[in-house]
Length: 475
Image (cartoon, rainbow, N blue to C red; front, side, top):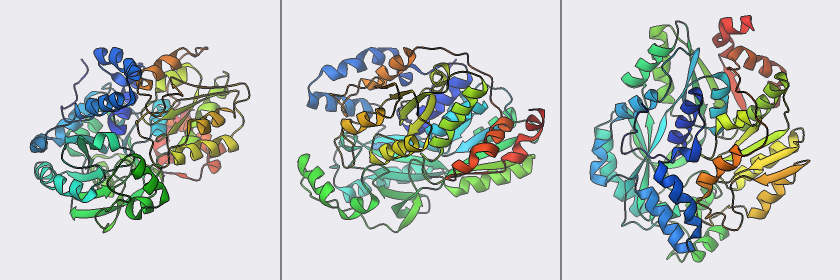
């Protein structure tokens, strides 16, 4: 029976969605409609029939339905989160387990290698109705007491209270964002590692080095104003013409934000890796005879070109066509259907300008694809740094034969909430079906890196040679 997530965990966030996608792949399953409950699968496609304001309200209400009351943050239990995460996976031996930062490209790498991934960071939405999205200082103040309650009951968690009035504007009317980072493995993660790793097995740390300005409130509590996306940290802190135009368009009482002064830079709330977990992994590995390896990257999208080219190489090794590209967006991804349709997956962290630029850089450098399929996550806000749909259409023009959107209603973007269910259906309808292969294995992955790794200096691997061990020699 599939374990139920704790009632305070967000289902539609990078950590939880990518965890479920990886676990379902290792069970031989795709992930229809992002794992939505059956009734919602029927309701979500109807959202696009509503007027704009009603659609935005429905989106916000759907999100706040997952949020907990401020007074209940002391019910959060880090071990319950860990038991749920580890319980999603088939309980069988694995040569390695990946622990740490989220990245959609990492999901596809784990699936290719047949490895589980355990997240360091998860998102806990907290109801908050009396703070205007553009009032950052009020947002900080409102989070102090519920944050204190959460941390008092969870000494192994660090809280990143995130407030992004640019991309999360609709949600911030009703809730705020608590992202928690695990500082220690804890009993449930440790028990899982001991259960599934053989003697001498490897713990691979996913280490995203991205940092962001924060205001430190205590040793384990920081406030992050803004997030990775179209607006820069400078624009979040000091404003500018794009911010002024955006706030005027949304009828805000402000023309720039006035956040609390940052005191330092810390690992970014959603994607960055908190090093204290790495120290605890080293301690645990030394005590139990495990190896530790690392995948290090500076931006969550940095592994995307490498993984897309890995899949292309893998398809050629299997003597199947290798000229179909699948460009994914945020949590719109499906590793099993990517393999089933012979698609090289290129993951974008969101639907904003930096992601468009990352995809364009890859397409300029890569051997041309005959076919490009692209989906776009819909967050409902015409915010700073949102590329117009025409820019995405031009990106599809890189295809030699056919470029198409998957599940995207171009007229409704970025309020195209029905894409949450249509993406999977459109991907499933792509012609051509190929058998799902067995795991590529760390040894063969190292063969790929030996030949092509120099092309991807943004991603650094440490300790994988030792981790491959007998599997590489056998290959």
